[in-house]
Image 1 (cartoon, one colour):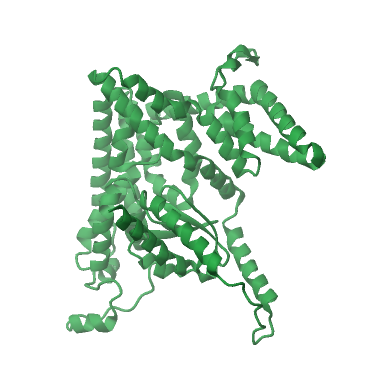
Image 2 (tube, rainbow, N blue to C red):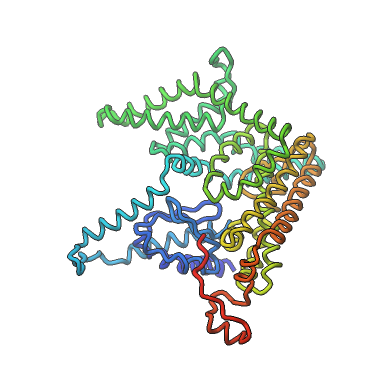
Length: 512
């Protein structure tokens, strides 16, 4: 059985590889929760439409890397197979022969320069300072999400067992397993930050470890005693960035013969002192302000705040701006054990599901879209929204907007309960939809927390459905899309099968 699954994953990787230009065109391979992220030497070699047509591909996203949406679980299994095929392809490829000049007299160097210019142009389009900053933030925190999810679920299970009085001899061990990662998360953030900003990762981790060292409780800064963990992930991020710049500065003037001794020593010493007597206090104040601000916002403007957050989250995801929220989620989890923002943002997925069901009802004759919805809805209920976004609502246009209306309604529902004193939070970031239930926590007990979250999902489903059903289509859209045409069916084949109906005009596929 395992061999069959491995063969299937390898087959998916083998289907993708030639469509991205082959092994020689792939310069880097990484993955996040749902996407295979590729660095490509020549973007023009990618066959976008053929990739989107693969059954296992949910969509593609153009950014600094070329991103192929495969979904959680699958992407983690396909990536190693893809990496293996890339390595095999590069090892087997013969050395390239010098390219002759083309008919216009351009040689290989000219053509290579032209390709490099096109690549640079595409990269520059996505390389605004703000987007680059958010990309770095995502690269620091996204690798931590699997551990956050696993530890969060174990913490929730342990809390349930404690409340029920089950296995009291086991619950302390589960508490240690669930809490160990969170106790040292600053170290992991420091390591990833230094790696992302071009420094030595282990030095970044070493400087960030100062923040969680128990001995800092004996130190005073700004007239206050420090406490272990003060400043949390924000302090760790700042400390590691500082360490990177000090390390680079040292390497400019320290002789090579002394570099291995002097550079790490000065880097850790200087950045460590600044961390202890500056960053920990400042980052601690900022972290406290984030927690206080988030709670105040929901307690006093819950309906409005929930509607804005739930309604705008899908566009934020499309623009990549949702990455700015990752450190905020992590800070809230550090401070109070859960983030109150994620359940509200998860309502965007509920609106998307409701909208997709309405599209299914409205387009009764469009077999292609209905087939996509049937296959994507189960993932949508579990919080994986890419198949519905890229395959249904975004190409159609208006249903994407009405899905956001459903998300706003669900967010407002949860925000209302926040105003009434019931906080709904998540002990980890990553999942949403029904997959978020094992991670839920709050201030009124698990039963109440789950009930409010379920109510928000239902509101999101219903409003997303109604908004899309009644306002998601114009009459022209219904005429255009409510056709009994399978994906890929030609106008001639349609005319043969439906002699009384006018043949649909061939259209370019919707651009995502």
